[in-house]
Image 1 (tube, rainbow over the protein chains, first blue to last red):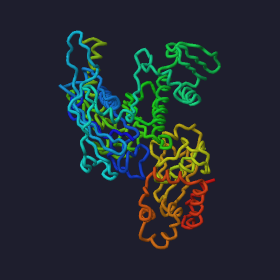
Image 2 (cartoon, rainbow over the protein chains, first blue to last red; image 1 turned 90 degrees about the vertical axis):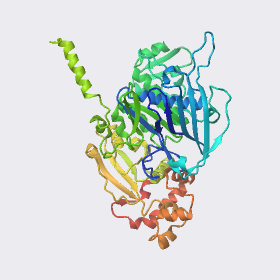
Image 3 (spheres, chains in turn purple, yellow; image 1 turned 135 degrees about the vertical axis):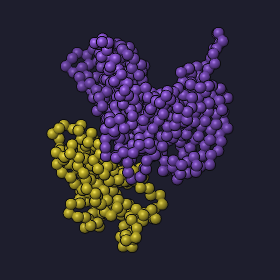
Image 4 (cartoon, chains in turn green, brown; image 1 turned 90 degrees about the horizontal axis):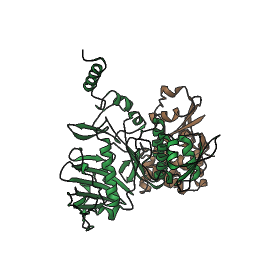
Length: 386
Length: 176
């Protein structure tokens, strides 16, 4: 079993120094309580099946999810894809704690930006990774979240010998499965190139029922691997369309919903971590709730599937039974900070979480003074500055 | 009509999940709300959301399963009109009595240790591998045959049903 336990980073975009995400369950996990949102990693060590990040616009939700996504890619491929905008200092300092098949690992490294190239010079699109250290200890089944203090760690001296490839690849290549929901482009065409292929990933009957859940007028969609797709609506003739035509015929919500449902089904089948930015994008809240209900159903989620998502739609958080798997992001003076709903706030648990968000308890609503400033200027714009 | 099956702990949920899996639960899976069993002491918002998914006219019958179920169930106003009935199924004195019955240790426990130890504490003493968790209980009951599980539950009725109050149902009523 693989589980991310903690991430700490400095120098990544606008995240504050030592920006830390703790994935280990913080609130009490009574083995006989609150199990639906909990994944048992090992004895006394728990993480969550659903984790939410919320906050106002530009508070850092996407940046945080990009960090998690890039970390999972680093663990699986050993690579950190170079993007100049990732670096807000001379390097990115990464600290990752994770669990893998009975051992706890502590990984540290510095990720360097790519220097300017001389003309004609060929370079790797991946960053250099230096000062790698990896420590490990057998988890004792007792210490739980206090593993750092209670376990004795040994140092792993392996190295890849390749400057743009992390030694994490030796360990995590086949273990740290991450899935990332693709974005939409503005014209509604899906970026995910495997959308049509994914129609054949699951059993035909399940795929068709997923499609009908999203659009009950569709009788079937058949894709045979070529550019032509057969689409049949109830009480209509079968149509042979190009992929592009299918994407323009179906609504954005239908396409993204089919994609998401199929991916969640695969996630439940195989296990792994799915990272979704703005889970509500194109969807009714009800659809999102029902996806999360699937993940928190222990009879379905036997392979420790995890969904990590961001949302503006705080009503989604009302279906969370726990609070420690909800994180709130704030941007203050161009630095992004993370708070935890359990550790950093106290409120009566019987009050709906959305009510607390909507009465601005967590300072996540638009700034009132700024809103009024815009309103006054808008009035001037419309009626003139008399 | 849909049944909202709520278990007080995850051990009870594990047992009911196994009963459903093995086809010996008395109710068809399609009749359960969301075709699943909920681990919940009270009706939380996550359950209300699921009830709201049903057609407006559909009624709910609540089945609570736990050790003693002494705390009152608070039915939220949002769904009060939809609740047709509420049943309690008690596994007294404690869920682990089922394990003791399987190990033929229940009589010994009742006679000699009941006043000193909880059933789970006694079970820990005689089975150091026991864990009061969903996974452990699911794996344990799943490893038994349908007949073995039925026997445990029937033996429980024959030995323990007298300690139930009038409003407390027995587990046997939930098996085929």
